[in-house]
Length: 472
Image 1 (cartoon, one colour):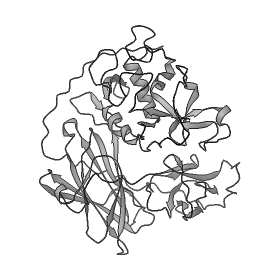
Image 2 (cartoon, rainbow, N blue to C red; image 1 turned 135 degrees about the vertical axis):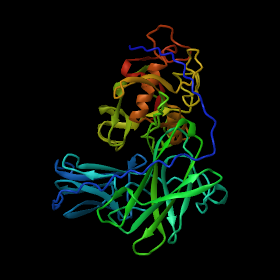
Image 3 (spheres, rainbow, N blue to C red; image 1 turned 180 degrees about the vertical axis):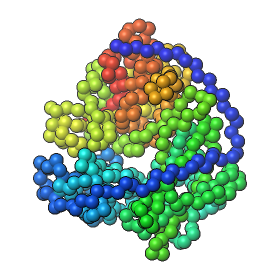
């Protein structure tokens, strides 16, 4: 078993926060998506045929890790390129089949109820990638405000978390105001999700400078995101770079929209997205934010029991769990138990694996993952800092700080039991945490309260399972 004992004291010198807002950053000139190949769509095969040809272009729509079922709503999936449009009703099972197409197609939905959101510019089907999964998301509600004023005390929305938001514009020149306060350093983008193919709404972003007490409009932006050449709809996109010293401050922006038909009200869905870590030129401590924590874990159903990943044996076996590309999570994997696809996640895939983030663990008894600041080895440093990670592209070691990754991003998607779904990035964190904080030491000075000291066993590829559970 591989053992790494890393002892590093990280001292961060904090500069007192001033009242001035974060820098406005810059918008990205993405330009228009490359033109699609001129191919005339062909007729589809029978969508109910379970043995679909490899040439078929298909779409599956998911919401909250389950197939989205349109019910009585007339939802259509659209495949579109420069020469034609293929429009197929979304089936009762949340799937659609366009048949044997060829070439590149933009893929989007029509008729989706307004209780859901997604990025209509994010999906492209190609000859190499014919099967598309569209992920719907919920509309987040700001922490306070009604959006009607520039300042918090006269209605400005207060926003603390990234996610998808919706601005409702009831008349020309109306703006909804947002004051966003990032909880960790990094690069953040604000981008509109207006369907450019409908081509009847043009979103506008106002960027403000100043402080929480005095603000001024610096520029308006209706570009930087996805648009069609010569189209009326031009999505906006702006990036903000937040240093460690600027965490806790805020920046203000306003969202509006123009109607090609002069019809109101209009809705503008937009996303605040963490794009990646911000690397300060004078520090090698890198704050890491989650990129896959977008689905809240479902609560326990009647008859289900929260079962830990050793199944009561005190042996963690990685062969029992496998990543499912269709859902984006790890699952209990068993051909014997789930070969009939009884859970609907694919053949052999059973319940989704969870991480017990904000509850006590039988294999790690010091405290919960969420609140622990030591690992049982007597240290007092923040345990969510993973020490000395090698960056191949920079050819050096840096310190990765996962505090906001766990205490903000994944805590936000926990259910009432304090568990969240295990994504690939969360699995990698748990493995790195177990290695770097020496939860397993091959019997050499195992720390109090660690899995090894408590009699648990795991091979090198299964160290991460100490924090995992599932509903059975």
